[in-house]
Length: 524
Image (cartoon, rainbow, N blue to C red; front, side, top):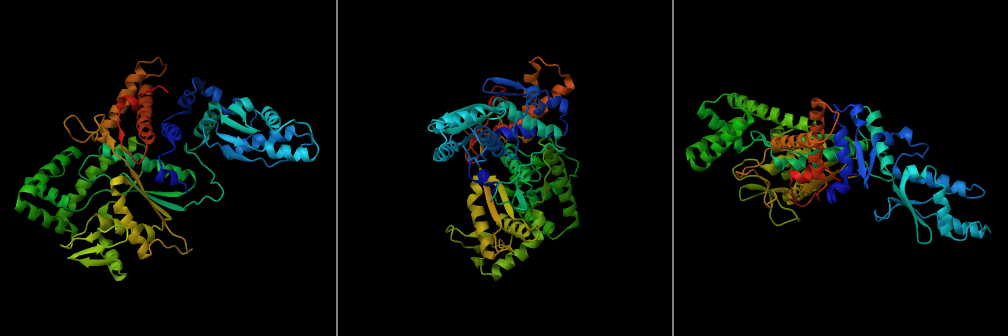
C-alpha cells in the first residue's frame, strides 16, 4: 500500500516534499525556477547544468529503477562480443551509503560465458568493470559507480540528473505535480478519504494543528501522484456542549456577530468559567445545546455566523499553506447518528450498560461509550457515524485518520466496531482499509509543549508569519538581483516550505523540539 511507510514509520519524503511545496504554488514563474540552486556533497549545481537538454544522451525509463536497468542493459549489450540480450537484475541498495541501486548480473553472465568457452574476461569482477565503463552517459547519470566483491556494481545518481528531473516536472507540468507509475503488484485504492487538520470552531488554529495538517496534506499528494482519487476532509469541531456555553454567553452579553476569531476565543474562555462556577448558567447552556440541535432558528443563525467567522480564518491559513480541503464538521453527521447506533444495537455490537450505550470489544476492557447515560452523543458517536458515511456513501477504498498518537486506542475501538458491523466488506470480497496515522507533539526547546511566553498556545498564523519574516531577513542580507516584490514572494515560498520540511524530517510518531533557527537554517 502506498501510504504504508507514512502510516507505520517516519515520513520518508523529506527532500521531495520540500521541493514539491516550493514549486507547487502557482505564483512561481519558470524564470524563478531556473534560478534555484541545489547543493549536494558540497557541489553547487545551478539549473542551467540541470536542464535535461544539457545532459546529453542518457537512458530513459518510467522510474529510477527502469533508468538504471536501461543503462545496464545497453552496457551489457555493448560489452558482450555477440551482442547477446540479457535481462539484467537491478535492486535497491540495502545501505544507501554504498549506492542507490545495485546490479549483480556480472556473475551469472560470466558463468554463462565460461560455459560457452568465452574467455574474454578473467573474472566476474573484470566483466563488471567493463560493464561500468560501457554505461552510456555514465558521468552525467551517476555521481558514483563502484564494483564490490566478486562483481556487484553499485551506482549513485548524480545531483544534476535528479535536479533536472524535478525541474523538468515543474516547468513542463501544467500543475507542477509529480505522476508516479505504480509498481507491479502494488495495491492501489481507487478512492481514499484522508481526515486531517480538524481545528475547532470559535478557536484559532494553533501549532498543535501543524503536524496533522502538514502530514495529512503530504499523504494526499503522495496518493494523488499514483492516480488515487483523494477526498480531503476537515472534521472540524462545530457541535456540542461548548456551543451551548458560547451561544448563551453571547446572548447574555447581547452581542451580535461583528467580531473576530480572537474575540470568539476570549468569549469562549469567559463562557467556560461561567459554566464551571454558575449552576444557572450551566443549565441554560445545556438547554441551548438542545435547542440548537432541535433547529431553533435564532440559535442556528448565531451558530452559523460563528462558524463562518472561524471558517474565514481557517481558509486564510490553508491558502498560505497551499491546501484546499472540504469542511465536514461534527454537525454534518448529527442526523445520521441515531440510525448508525440503531444498526449497531440490532447487530448486537452496541449494548446498554448503566444507562449508557456501549461497545465492548476484545481490544481492551474499557468499553467505547457511543451514547451517554443522559442520551447525549459524544466523539465516538460522531466518529462511528462519519465512518459509516464514508464507507457506505462515499464508497472509499481506504480511509486515513491523521491525529496525535494519544487517540490510537480510540480509533482501534472505532475500527473494530466498523469491522464487526460489516461496514468494511466490499462487493468484491475485499476489505476497506482503515489507517490511523498517529504523530507526536510539537515541543518547545524547554522540553514542554510549544507555547508562548505567557503560557498560551502559539497561533499557527503567528508561526507561519514568523517563518516568512525570518526568511525575508535572511534573504535581505544576501546579494541578490531580486527586487522587493520578488524577495517577498521568495521569502513566503521558502518560509512555508521550511515549516513543512522541518515537520516532515522528524520521526512522525515521537515528539520533536521546534526551533525557528534550525527550521530556517539555509545551510546544508
